[in-house]
Length: 319
Length: 214
Ligand SMILES: Cc1cc2nc3c(=O)[nH]c(=O)nc-3n(C[C@H](O)[C@H](O)[C@H](O)COP(=O)(O)OP(=O)(O)OC[C@H]3O[C@@H](n4cnc5c(N)ncnc54)[C@H](O)[C@@H]3O)c2cc1C
Image 1 (tube, rainbow over the protein chains, first blue to last red):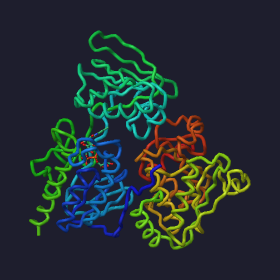
Image 2 (tube, each protein chain N blue to C red; image 1 turned 30 degrees about the vertical axis):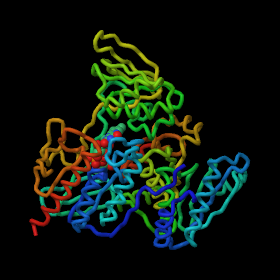
Image 3 (spheres, rainbow over the protein chains, first blue to last red; image 1 turned 90 degrees about the vertical axis):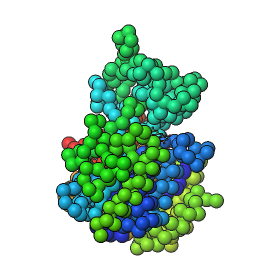
Image 4 (cartoon, protein in one colour; image 1 turned 135 degrees about the vertical axis):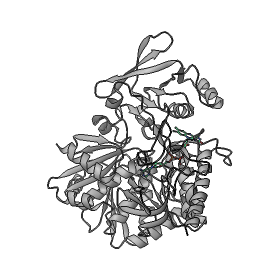
């Protein structure tokens, strides 16, 4: 059993900051490191725990410098520690509202309210829902979006994973340590995960990959007991018995705070220029929440560096 | 090396020094007969924690002591109840390991101080509650969304002593989890009957608690 500290909050009691970062994933915490080193009073708000989505990922294998890979939880902790080292204040509070029409910007959270001269949005994404019958009803009753949280409930059971991209492939490999059998259902004719992950899926006896199939409904009584899946080519519908379903069928941006205030692309991702400026001066966006061609730790870290640097420049120019 | 790293020990010493204004006791009910790695490690952890502050102590009790369990209003064992002169029922059924370790640290700090990190309107609403409410938050050690829910339950109890807040290790208490159909965490059960799921900010958490009481 692991007993290590996940968050080390410092509370200055301050209510106004020069820079406020929303989201403490790789993007947000990298921005905090850059701002901290520029001696900008910085706060980072986080609604779950510091580290961002990576804390859910068992092992990150493609982040440069960690040749043997690094546990996501460990990487998240290192980011938080690094940001705090340079003075950032991490607050475990959910931002519930942003008022961006005048400066300083106003930030309302689950515990209070703050103001800031600049804002970096680094809220990441959430798993996309399928929008099919039974999904709402059985969410948290068999349907899960977090393998590291819920895999132990499916020890020795049959489960499906929806989506054969990198996330679905990685989480299937993790789940195979608990579940008896995993069927990955992929809409496309081929899996989109990295070839190295596809090799591992093929080598794993507990995992079957069904391409050109889609899930059409989740069924059960009080808990999920089966899913209907459709063969896209033949139109045939099969029912398979499963206790669990993990959905990794793409992402939606966590844009609720700004969807009426900032320019978004047609999928709802925040539109930025190459300096990560949004449609409002002093408001920047970084990482998975913005319109970017690749959503990974390495790209989010790069974004965080640019956004932190640009927020600093913005604050300097205003002086 | 102990269960807590040298770096974390240093940090915790400082945190306890700054936050424990009164004595806090960790009351650990353990299963003596079936002394498993689970309960042994828990004991070791609590001993290490207690060694980090003069204001923190450990009291060991046996799960067989039904009378004491009853007087503490505990229904499951093993259990760690965090006690002080401050009113409130702040409890852990099973081990707060992994992501939950921080919940134990926060609970100790809360019991040793007058801290209440809830919005004013939530505190006001909580104080108006007249009925007894038992909040059990089912967790797994790998769940990053769970500490927020555990903290809400504990803080609610500090705001109104009619409320009991407990973390429940869903894997360890497998049968109970099955009884409440827990298959995803955090899963919150109110008065051993109705429940709700997910990590919610305090105001929404309170709405859900009230809804579950109906
Ligand atoms: C299953 C899976 C496996 C993955 N594996 C890899 C991998 O192996 N390698 C890799 O490079 N990438 C991987 N990724 C992708 C990687 O996790 C993301 O690209 C990265 O975490 C994005 O960083 P971010 O900082 O933009 O956002 P996130 O990490 O998503 O962080 C955003 C943070 O903002 C917080 N937040 C959101 N709204 C609010 C609010 N209103 N108030 C306060 N806080 C808020 C969230 O709680 C979250 O902590 C994986 C993703 C998934 C889903």
